Structure formats: C-alpha cells, structure tokens
Length: 235
Image 1 (spheres, one colour):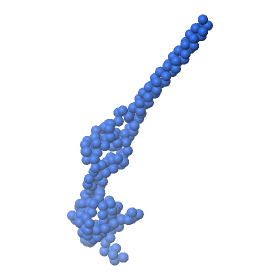
Image 2 (tube, helix red, strand yellow; image 1 turned 120 degrees about the vertical axis):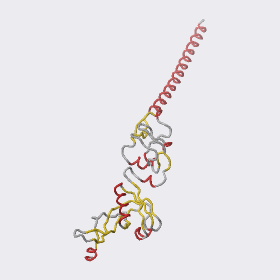
Image 3 (cartoon, helix red, strand yellow; image 1 turned 180 degrees about the horizontal axis):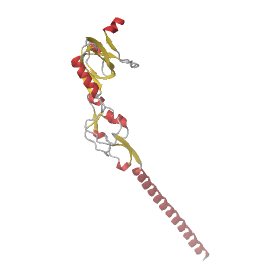
Image 4 (cartoon, helix red, strand yellow; image 1 turned 90 degrees about the horizontal axis):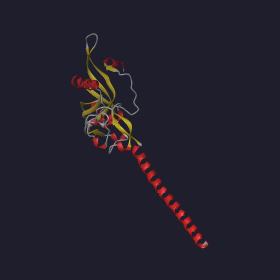
C-alpha cells in the first residue's frame, strides 16, 4: 500500500513539473511574439525625415535652386509607413537634377520626380538669367575664358562730357560675373546675370564695345574706375 501511494505521489509531482515547464514555454513564446510585434510596430511608426514641398515646384525647376533657395521644401518627420518609395532625405540628392513634373505643396519629394539636368538652366537661381555676349578673341582674353571662369566686364564707348564735348571712355561695368559657357577662341560668351545686368549687357553690346578680363580666385573688388584720355595723359 505504501509503495502504491509513493508511486502516485511521484507521478503527481512529475505531472506538476511538466505542467509548469509547459506553461513557462508557452509564456516565453507569447512574450517573444509580443516583443516582435511591438518591435515591428515601433519601426513602422518611427519618424523618418524626408523633404516635403512647401510651395509649388514647377516642372523644369533646377534641383540646385531647390536645394540652395529658401522656401521650396522643409525636412519633415513622418512615420515610416507613410514615407513614399524613393522619398528624398538628403538635399544633396537634388544636385544637377531638374523637376520632371509639378510638385504640389505638402507633397513628398521623390527620386521619380527628378532627372538629370542639362544646359545652363541648372546653373540659374530664381533671380538669375543667362545672357550671351558676342566677343572677339581679344575681348575674351584670347580664349583663356571658359566655363566656370569669373570675369570683370569693361565697356568702351563715346561719352559726352559736361561741356558738351564727346570723348571716348572705358569703364568697369560689372565685377565678378560667372561664365556659364564660352567659345574656344572668341565668339559668344554666356554670363550669369541678374535681369538688370542682362539688360545692361544687351544695351552695351549694341551701343559700346565689351571687353572681359579674367579674374583670379583671390581677386579683390576695386572701386570701378573710368578711363579716358586724361587718364592716359596722366599715366
């Protein structure tokens, strides 16, 4: 009798132990499932900073302008599950790109919205224009001016003095203008200018002779001089 009771007691204890182990395993599995679900949920809602348009970006707008000008976009943190495929997170991605389609305010900027830019338009800001100046070889520094050069613009023309006498003068018109393109040895030179500068250069091209001088990278900006016959006589 005693042996039977001992056997039952042993069996009961063993069953209890196995039940406890089983319950622990089930609890561990449930915990792992919960943690995995929680981790995925956190990843889905974690903020990702993407570029969002703040105003209408028209098709053809250079990425360099969007990247460097204020007001086109704003870095905005969005839940990961709301971020569009190809969403742009780094403004540097827009370098040398152009908008292929209109982008509305509040819309995420994506890689599909942009493509490689070609031509001088990618080098122009909102208040900049490209203007072509026809020049001979000497006036273009003998072909030493090329894309990316910085130049000063001089003009020679006939000017009427206060006494009514007309005399030839040479004056410095603009300093440190950027060359977008240039012919190999004289010819057309395309400058980046403001609208007012562009109009002034067009007028000068029709009514005076334009000369360019090449600037070094460390050039100063002296007071614009006016050179006339009296200057040469004093020289």
